[in-house]
Length: 403
Image (cartoon, rainbow, N blue to C red; front, side, top):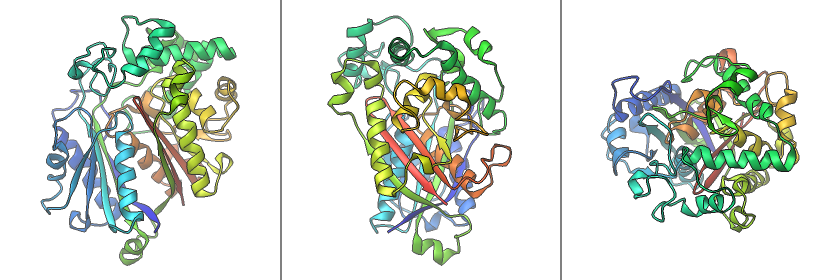
């Protein structure tokens, strides 16, 4: 049975503590927008998977109760930065499996200011304040990094991705300017996104001159902590027909989740442990399921938590050969007028990264793009979109959408 996105909604992503609101307030706003976009009521919803990382158990119910008290099952989902796409995957499986005709996938996050640590909770709640203690669920990943690069007193997530960047530079000759070109592109794209946390454009030189977080990554190449929520209504073909939703329905052509295999760790490389092998496997599986390839994709929302991860993901998705990603972004192939438009929303770097909402927000952007309703961000003639969302520790989710 096919599954369709028939409604999407999100809040503006904002710096933590910008607004005096609770996580259930933001979830209510995003969920209401998604239901209104689909032209249905909460009473039509049969199940609700809810993604978040920082709130307590059953926070999903507290958020969903703002939309209605109908007694439907609510699932609390936590999969690090891939949390929202995991909730969306559950919704799709419920529909494709014939269990339900209408499911609401909801994600939100209310975060603290400051750099994210080693894991979805910054490491502190697991008893490993630096993200490297034995109680951390990502200790194995950071152990690979420490064996090769040591462990410094910089934010752990920036450190492990920064070290992946160093490895890429040493192995392939990737330059600091090419890394900065990712940030420049995504900040430029976000200027036209009213939902983005930042809407300022920067030159490559300005990005290189920004404060260094962990060499070679500067502040403008790193995703910020953010508050925000996103929601998507997933429906069956018969629900679409019954409610006359053909004009807004976007097919989930394929979706794949992978977790770490030996390949992530065996090389002793940060490029492996930050998720490139997972992303490559998820993309290949999604292509096979949909019967399409990267050459068929028009617009991509991918997980640019740091600029290096966008380059690593180009290679994982088959957009270029290993080591050629720096040249690809520099060529203009991944912006308007190029072969693909990558992160028209501004991506995580500029749109923001509330962990529990990010993956669904990516799909919201792609839904607007494939409907032709992305306004100044519109990618001309977009028919096939791809979302890529990863969580360190680990999970990679690739979603192919088709209109």
